[in-house]
Length: 378
Image (tube, rainbow, N blue to C red; front, side):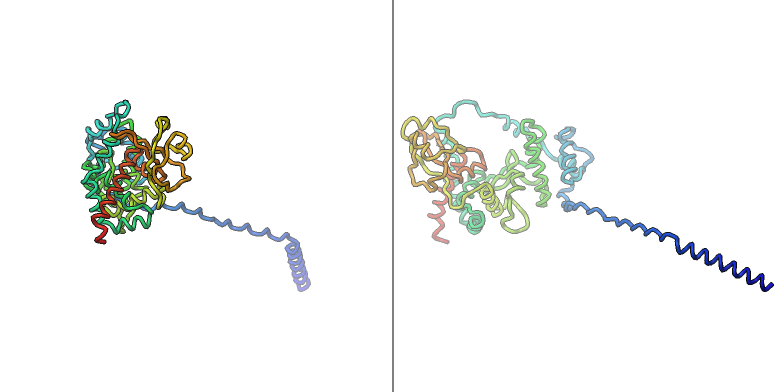
């Protein structure tokens, strides 16, 4: 029995040794596969939350003068998708808008295609170079001298040219318009096909403006075509060039100080040259002067003008600069001027030689009156 037990022990030990040998020659285990690191995709920056537009407007569909128009529905869809407006808000607001039939009739009037009558500049100028315009301009300057001086320091635009714009546009706020801007823009966007694309964009800009400035869009009043405030900015111009010049946290073109800063900023952003001239009078000798094309967008060297008998009658402020040839028909015959870069900048406000000359002449008249009436008191 003892011998058998020893045999069993020996056998068992031999099996254990054999198993141990096999284990020693087994290939090492494959390294564990690394666990993939999941890198989260960067989140797209979220657009800043827009404030809720002002006014308790809400409707399931558009009613009233602009109800049932596909163009209105497309406009609402665009404003919802691109600018985050609530559809019910826009449907309620546009249900309140009213069609201005006289605006369409006015826009449809076309100027007769005939040669302008002699003396056109004299008649145009007389509309704006009035005692009312000049006296109110000087008084406005006196009241807002501080803001006008700040605007000149910041934007490089002299006070008289800011006032020239405001005087021609609204007589310094005396006539900013009586039509609701909402009605004017909706009428021209949806019921005036010839300019529908332009005015649809202006309506869009108007709604963005009123939302940003916390204004009820049914409240602002302006011109028959939607121009606003003392300087008569269209809504797209407001978004681009209006400034909060009185530092109250809002841009308000009906507020004189904001209007002053915004007009000056408009000029500066369009290339106004601080300290630069606007126009210089010229003399024309001989009939060849009439052969040259004239207008704010013409460009001539002094040598080219001289070859046609046109010479500056005053001292040129920028002798090497190409100039525009301006021909104005007065009651006493043609009048010639040379326009500089700053004259061209004025025409960015209104693309008209007559308009820019009226702004210039009114600016000089207001400046002269202000100096004689108020400068001694400062």
